[in-house]
Length: 293
Image (cartoon, rainbow, N blue to C red; front, side, top):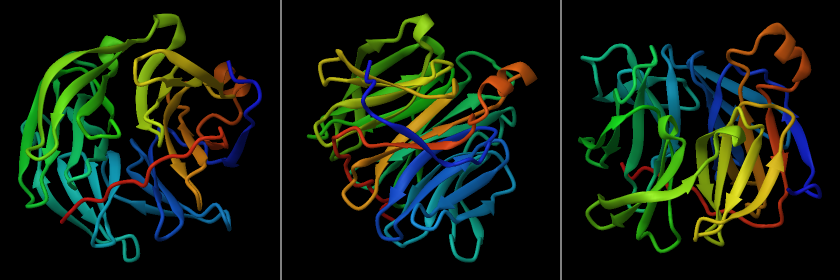
């Protein structure tokens, strides 16, 4: 447990399914999504202003781009989004033959490829996949038979990719060929006990430790590169989805949460559920990679 790190509510959004935070160092804002509402949020911690772009479909994750715009993984594929005008253009179609599936969490590797996966909206097991959007706009399916494709990030040297399929309550690790973008040697990294919640989004900090959000666990766990539990941050919301380092020195840990599915009693016990929280855990993050269009 980590009782010394203060957790503060910085945006009382009451998001239905807040997810996928990422820090834009150029605009000095936190970008994240509210999945089923189809919203991309751009939050300015300095002013408290929160700009919303309605994508018009469920949006699972968003990535920064070297062109200054965003790339969203949303229902039906990948889309370019202009954060100033709100203009949305489809880049590539994904699983248009499976309308009951939607895109979920995603992240960009150091070579500028955007990885994002899918999941069933009617809770079919093993119906999803993990995809890689290449800088030339082509899409490659990398993993099949996924129940809920979720958090992913890479080791400091780029030789390992950590990956969550929430449906198996486990974080796995792959050997990663950074030059080619290929995966191999999948094996378990961390088994999350059922009583601790379900593994959701993740991010790797500047020391190579993994910060994992626990859906229905009300916490973020920090693991060593060897898979040992190092710290536990408890939050006043049970549905914790993902975290991202931000701020001027990447010392602020922003954490998104949800309130989807909470009954009236549970919602009353968690009035801040669906908010965006901030902690300063005493370690730094890494700059988010940008899609190399």
